[in-house]
Length: 203
Image (cartoon, rainbow, N blue to C red; front, side, top):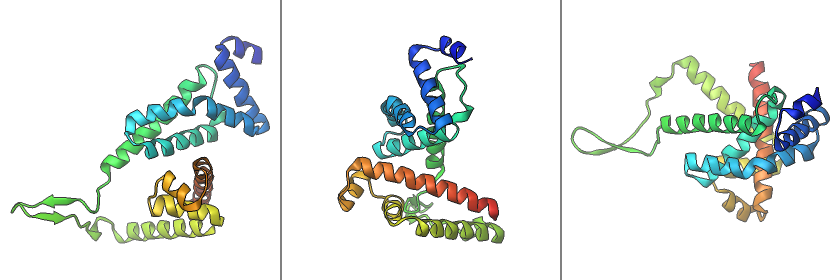
């Protein structure tokens, strides 16, 4: 079976398939790292063209690999791994762009009928009492999860997502290599994702 699959793939595709099998069957971290190394740059530059922002492209690249690796068992060698990965990255990026486009900036000003600029003030009646309670519960749950992270992960999450600092600023603040900052933020996001999913399932 493996031989037939290899014959249907290019040399590059066959090597990717070998790495995927090592990752799935043996949990080989080097195989995951090699897969990421083979496609990280091309994914990053593809996403950079879509979002026009280096930090967003960095985050989306890491998210794309995170989603791909979580669903690696669903990949079949009917087409190239790179095609499957690009589709995941593109769809995730499109979702991000939609969310960003639909998000309303709280500090955005609007001009009223009299030509006076007014600050947008969201009304509290958009949510009914039940929706407000659910939103409050989710916020509290997120804060609880972040507080339970290991100190180094908690600090990174707070700097990146609460204080909205760039990777370069975080690296400078913590006196860490930027590669270490990105790797540890990736791990922190994975922990948050799995913990929140588990907790939501119990609500």
